[in-house]
Length: 123
Image (cartoon, rainbow, N blue to C red):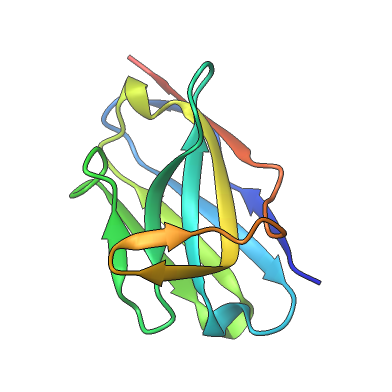
């Protein structure tokens, strides 16, 4: 069983902050790599940030310096701290766990997608 559930989305003004959470259920979530993706209307799903089991992180250039990915291993939760948000950050954000982060690239686990959480940034 590999299930994730995202939460924390909402409406925020440009320049504001938001924290997304991803609660995972299933074995060894904290021993595997994980990531956040997003998908805006009419666009493909894109990688936002990934974190390795050892804490190594990787970010898309568009969010580098503004977003921080972190995880709380004791409670199987993945976070995305979104700071200084922009209207172009508006999208549905998805969590993916049990993937593989290697050489800066994240390979998602197709069996571990949540329903997503909507983030809307107003200008």
